[in-house]
Image 1 (cartoon, one colour):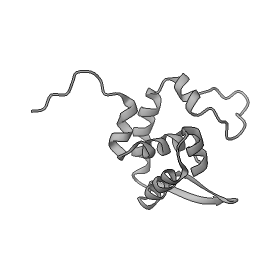
Image 2 (cartoon, one colour):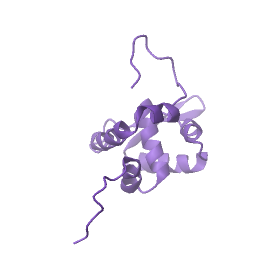
Image 3 (cartoon, one colour):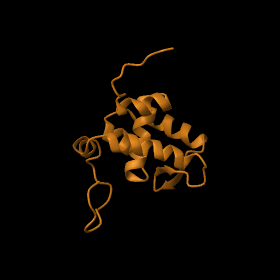
Image 4 (cartoon, helix red, strand yellow):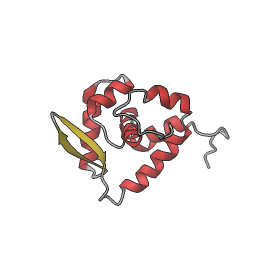
Length: 123
Protein backbone atom coordinates (compact mmCIF):
# COMPACT_ATOMS: atom_id res chain seq x y z
CA UNK A 1 0.00 0.00 0.00
CA UNK A 2 1.39 3.38 -1.00
CA UNK A 3 1.05 6.21 1.51
CA UNK A 4 0.78 9.72 0.12
CA UNK A 5 2.07 12.61 2.18
CA UNK A 6 -0.75 13.90 4.39
CA UNK A 7 -0.31 17.37 2.91
CA UNK A 8 -3.16 18.28 0.57
CA UNK A 9 -2.35 18.08 -3.11
CA UNK A 10 -1.83 21.53 -4.61
CA UNK A 11 -4.82 22.31 -6.84
CA UNK A 12 -2.50 23.92 -9.38
CA UNK A 13 -1.26 20.47 -10.34
CA UNK A 14 -4.58 18.65 -10.36
CA UNK A 15 -5.60 19.59 -13.90
CA UNK A 16 -2.08 19.05 -15.21
CA UNK A 17 -2.13 15.56 -13.71
CA UNK A 18 -5.54 14.73 -15.13
CA UNK A 19 -5.10 16.19 -18.62
CA UNK A 20 -1.42 15.41 -19.08
CA UNK A 21 0.35 18.75 -19.32
CA UNK A 22 0.39 22.38 -18.26
CA UNK A 23 -0.77 23.71 -21.63
CA UNK A 24 -3.93 21.58 -21.49
CA UNK A 25 -4.60 22.90 -18.00
CA UNK A 26 -4.14 26.51 -19.13
CA UNK A 27 -6.35 26.06 -22.19
CA UNK A 28 -9.22 24.63 -20.16
CA UNK A 29 -8.95 27.19 -17.37
CA UNK A 30 -8.92 30.03 -19.89
CA UNK A 31 -11.97 28.77 -21.76
CA UNK A 32 -13.73 28.12 -18.45
CA UNK A 33 -13.02 31.69 -17.31
CA UNK A 34 -14.08 33.46 -20.51
CA UNK A 35 -16.63 30.99 -21.89
CA UNK A 36 -14.84 31.02 -25.23
CA UNK A 37 -11.42 32.01 -26.50
CA UNK A 38 -8.92 31.79 -29.32
CA UNK A 39 -5.39 30.42 -29.34
CA UNK A 40 -3.56 33.74 -29.36
CA UNK A 41 -5.61 35.07 -26.42
CA UNK A 42 -4.75 32.01 -24.34
CA UNK A 43 -1.08 32.20 -25.31
CA UNK A 44 -0.94 35.91 -24.50
CA UNK A 45 -2.55 35.60 -21.06
CA UNK A 46 -0.18 32.80 -20.02
CA UNK A 47 2.90 34.12 -21.89
CA UNK A 48 3.37 30.87 -23.79
CA UNK A 49 3.86 29.96 -27.45
CA UNK A 50 0.79 29.74 -29.67
CA UNK A 51 1.62 26.39 -31.33
CA UNK A 52 1.25 24.21 -28.21
CA UNK A 53 -2.02 26.00 -27.44
CA UNK A 54 -3.32 25.28 -30.94
CA UNK A 55 -2.31 21.62 -30.59
CA UNK A 56 -4.24 21.31 -27.33
CA UNK A 57 -7.31 23.07 -28.75
CA UNK A 58 -7.32 20.69 -31.73
CA UNK A 59 -6.84 17.70 -29.41
CA UNK A 60 -9.79 18.73 -27.22
CA UNK A 61 -11.94 19.43 -30.28
CA UNK A 62 -11.17 16.00 -31.77
CA UNK A 63 -12.10 14.45 -28.41
CA UNK A 64 -15.43 16.31 -28.52
CA UNK A 65 -14.81 18.36 -25.37
CA UNK A 66 -14.53 21.64 -27.28
CA UNK A 67 -16.18 23.02 -30.40
CA UNK A 68 -14.94 25.83 -32.60
CA UNK A 69 -16.35 28.40 -34.99
CA UNK A 70 -14.82 30.92 -37.32
CA UNK A 71 -14.92 34.45 -35.99
CA UNK A 72 -13.39 36.74 -38.58
CA UNK A 73 -9.90 35.41 -39.17
CA UNK A 74 -9.79 33.66 -35.80
CA UNK A 75 -11.16 30.35 -34.61
CA UNK A 76 -13.05 30.66 -31.32
CA UNK A 77 -13.27 27.64 -29.02
CA UNK A 78 -15.82 26.86 -26.32
CA UNK A 79 -17.03 23.82 -24.41
CA UNK A 80 -19.17 21.46 -26.46
CA UNK A 81 -22.71 21.68 -25.04
CA UNK A 82 -23.68 18.44 -26.84
CA UNK A 83 -20.93 16.32 -25.27
CA UNK A 84 -21.90 14.16 -22.29
CA UNK A 85 -18.34 14.66 -21.01
CA UNK A 86 -18.30 18.43 -21.21
CA UNK A 87 -20.26 19.10 -18.00
CA UNK A 88 -18.26 16.68 -15.79
CA UNK A 89 -15.01 18.12 -17.16
CA UNK A 90 -16.23 21.65 -16.48
CA UNK A 91 -17.13 20.60 -12.92
CA UNK A 92 -13.54 19.42 -12.36
CA UNK A 93 -12.16 22.61 -13.88
CA UNK A 94 -14.49 24.71 -11.73
CA UNK A 95 -13.13 23.07 -8.54
CA UNK A 96 -9.55 23.84 -9.61
CA UNK A 97 -10.50 27.36 -10.76
CA UNK A 98 -12.23 28.13 -7.45
CA UNK A 99 -9.14 27.00 -5.54
CA UNK A 100 -7.00 29.66 -7.25
CA UNK A 101 -6.88 32.77 -5.04
CA UNK A 102 -8.82 35.72 -6.47
CA UNK A 103 -5.71 37.92 -6.67
CA UNK A 104 -3.92 35.26 -8.74
CA UNK A 105 -6.96 34.83 -11.01
CA UNK A 106 -7.03 38.58 -11.58
CA UNK A 107 -3.35 38.54 -12.56
CA UNK A 108 -3.78 35.60 -14.94
CA UNK A 109 -6.99 36.82 -16.54
CA UNK A 110 -6.35 40.56 -16.37
CA UNK A 111 -7.17 41.23 -20.02
CA UNK A 112 -10.84 42.04 -20.53
CA UNK A 113 -12.27 40.47 -23.65
CA UNK A 114 -15.41 42.60 -23.64
CA UNK A 115 -16.97 45.22 -21.39
CA UNK A 116 -18.31 44.00 -18.05
CA UNK A 117 -22.07 44.18 -17.72
CA UNK A 118 -23.11 47.04 -15.43
CA UNK A 119 -23.44 45.79 -11.86
CA UNK A 120 -21.88 42.38 -12.57
CA UNK A 121 -19.59 41.32 -9.69
CA UNK A 122 -15.98 40.26 -10.26
CA UNK A 123 -15.71 36.52 -9.79
